[in-house]
Image (cartoon, rainbow, N blue to C red):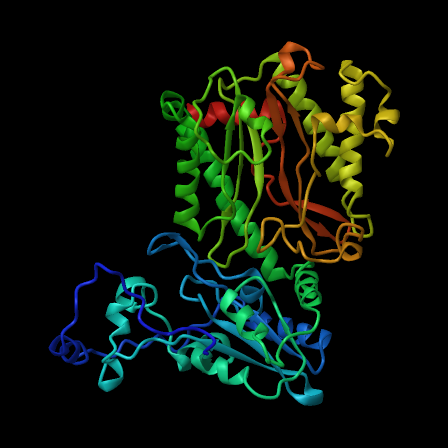
Length: 491
């Protein structure tokens, strides 16, 4: 039994290939090498990252897969994105990475030797090309999905020793060191290291996942630059959306129009969106993860747009604005918007090195509880609503007010609580602050004019030595500034 089946991936409707065609296809191809000076983005940072991981698990083999292709329908796969930990350790972020595996092999007291196991470019000439993968294989063939580096090219790109993916099975055979696998990413790899009689499996894999998340919590300067780039592209996408509002308002599924406009910018400027775009009009904005985006736009309602561009290096922004589709907030809309803005201001003011991660959320929730009590929506004092044995204000806000941001939109999620949720902020953390009010359309505790309003404000910030820098400050936040911004773009 081999680690991964390597036969041709063909379809029942592929045309048969004659021996004559096979022989002809194996001749007369000019060399097309990659340029010698190409390196993965962030190349200089990768050895230090791998060294920090190595130091956490001395003497153990560490296996970090890129992931595998997933079928969308029949013989059509979803677009591939490498696992974030693999990308962080190798700098390889492209769609040519499915099935590849990074192994940190224990190398005595000196730590680990990183080895990249990959599927190299298929040969085109001579007998080795007779199988015809480069033109016959629908999943991996160069003529079907594009070129892959050969082993030498991959070494130049990454600085890593590279081996053919077929040789990984040999590595997992025979006596094995203590091994940890980033599990749940590649089912073939999980099966190979879990198979009966295999000594390769396995120490506490959860600890590897946790450490990989925790090592990514503090961003270096290059990562902050990538995140700022994703924010800048996202700002352009929000501008595109506002300019497209007249056409979207005319379309019976205006939410889809908005989604498409933003996603066009994301694909044009980066890898795509960092997560499914939320384009929620009216009461749809009260659904926290509304991604159906199949509704019309009511010119008297609000549009909640939650979207982020993912860079080619896979870092994503995560920004939300709530916009009046008429161009002007109604009095009730503005009342609710201003409360959300005040909550976000309080949350941002709580960000500084040494503050508890949860402090900014608690600051925002105090503003909500006090505001809801002032409105008469909460029938109890704010202090009582904020008590742990109450929490009644949460009927109208539901979720946390932010999260870490980076290669994943909800970044470093496997980190242990004492380093993240129950930890303290450090310079270099990048996070969102996103309080929201979700006033359900059928909530009889609310006055009629507030029912069906969903408002969220979300910005991306980096913790600095003395506070936090608002990375998304190119987008307006106050109601008046939003109205003026929209008027300028629609003029």
